[in-house]
Length: 105
Image (cartoon, rainbow, N blue to C red; front, side):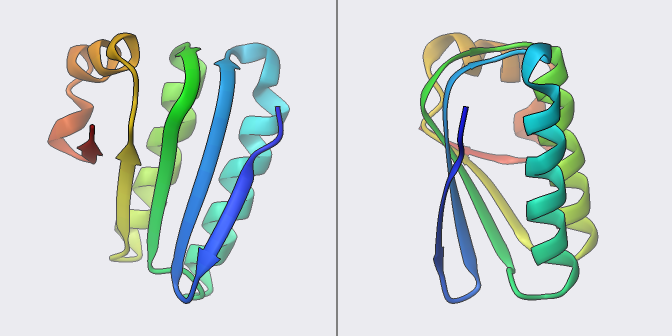
């Protein structure tokens, strides 16, 4: 499951697709490392993760998102989740992710 990255100045857009499960834990670790490295150096001050092509995700990937979110917030950067489907929105509602992250339909 490759990620697509698009960078405009200090904003990073990440496009994720498919089914996100523990089986892709290595990819999750890579994603955390790639994003947090850019945020830590100040090269990126805004991160948008686009979920429009994600079919479903498990709790492991929820943890991946929270790790990224935590680091982004520590660096006073912006974190946005875009276009999650209905099932993923339900998961975000259950864990009240919308209380700490901006989620755009």
